[in-house]
Length: 351
Image (cartoon, rainbow, N blue to C red; front, side, top):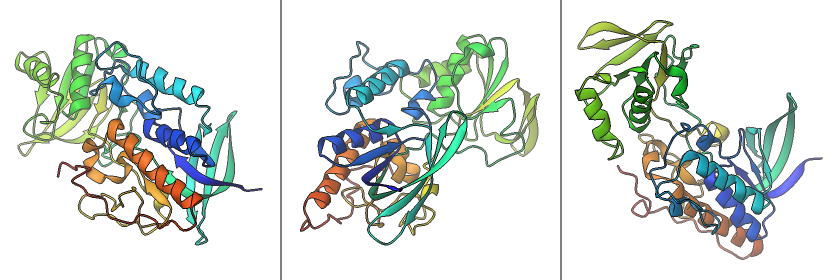
């Protein structure tokens, strides 16, 4: 028998959890599904990462964030969101991936799920009147376009711990926040670090307290940096690149490809989603609903290349707005849905 619910929330990150809390408190029959672990993106952050924002702006559901640090760490955040999920008794299915979403044109979506348990994958289906997509963007690296060796045994699109790379030659591709922080941490843990970046200078968006540290380490020669370098191939010994029309290479035991991430809207392949061709941003209403009735995109997933303007602190607000709109439609048959276009002056896009 196919389970029927009012609201399916895809993604158990802070924004998805916030949507679930609102839904539960408003009496909506909801379910959260997450293809990984709870707050999977935060779990995949570097082990020693510190948040850019302050603790109060990471709070959800009115639960105080208990941190004595001005800027909380990854581990403190994991503990906080896990505790909230427990205390709120949120209905969450982890290790459950949405394989397909089908619009059956009857004011209801059919969703195909793969649930992984005990080493087995079980396919399930459910039907839902509404869907909130809160998948963020951290699960989909931009990468290097699949160049030879990009997905080799000695490469990764995620940096976790510096300890294993003591006395290793490590190459960082990318000089944004992730690349800068990884380079500094690896250097201080005894790795020989080279940064390759395809622009003349490091990114201007690097955190203001990180940028001087990186630039000073480069200036003194502690970290090798090669700018305006286009990486062409990676093998077990070298990273190959082009610079000034010439081919060159750098020796590398391991390579981190930290070139950023992008939202993945592949789940919506069955729909004619209204997006901006240039930026990839989805055209949303004030309630973060797409042009597909009943399909809401909250957090960064709908903002294309402008993910650097959407964080937990405003994504959690998106969740509340969307759920309140859904509750109004469920509870009041005469309610007229809010279809006004989203004002991008309210939600900046750093365009």
